Length: 406
Image (cartoon, rainbow, N blue to C red):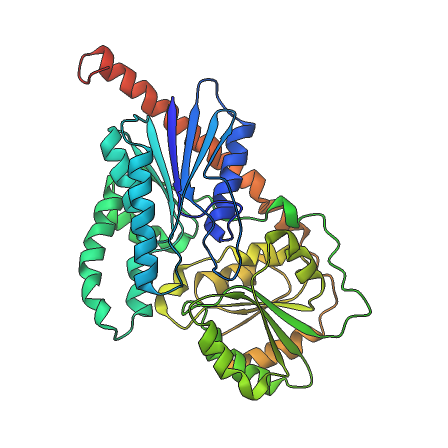
């Protein structure tokens, strides 16, 4: 049996998709059926130009191979990202040329990775399993606003529906996607294996050293239009000046906008480049509160950011400028969360005052047990193995009947 896994990002690169794919692969290794070969085709680390990470182009790890496609230098603009994806697509199609797979798995937040997985599945005559982490067209419809690029959305919408319709099985990380997927892919089997807490963030001492200044509000992650930090941090920092400080760690397409907007309050906001994941525990330890924020777009009401699972493991107060599914999830599942409307700086300032009064650490034992990523990925890996085995069995049956060439 042979399985192809496509993920644009993969360790040691930094991204939610990278961490999720690694957890799935680790779970597959723990429950590997005899005779299964897994080929992973991804990119050379390229998430942030401000964080250079090296990795080999090719690795063999037992029954697993990892092929990393070199990427051109790029920033976070759409034109650059399009060129980078075209390089990935060409590399993938070259790497798998002439190979036959029993099943193809693609994990995708950007639509085109799913489209590429669908293409690979068609080339192999194999069934497709998609892991959908975002609804690309839905999100871009909000993010693009009045941009001339909006005229491309109908074409992308058709491509998205065709891709989803081809999939035999689709996993969604947020129940907010369920309605869209059932409409686009009525015949696909739906799964809901969410994101979770990685082992690296469990059983850690997150107590803040007493010799550190505070209170410090940490945001660690992407700084783009989707996060909308440039719309809320400057005013919020002004409102809490002298009472709290923001540490923003990351990079992205709106970093320059944020840097310009915080000039009047730069004593209250520190910007730092992204750091390797191995340093994240220290960042969390030295913070008093953790901030997650999504821009005020209707599409983001359906998403459930992976970062909040990581934040929850620290036992520290979470300031969450989110709405919809994320807001409901935090209120019902994560004690010590202070939810406010996206881009509402005054509401953020009030949440900060409330969080300062919260005794720490917050008891989240029930949440940690329920959302341990290794447990979730063990279930997902078994589901994927079942999918491959069913596909392989069906292929052999057709070959036996002479319906397809051996």
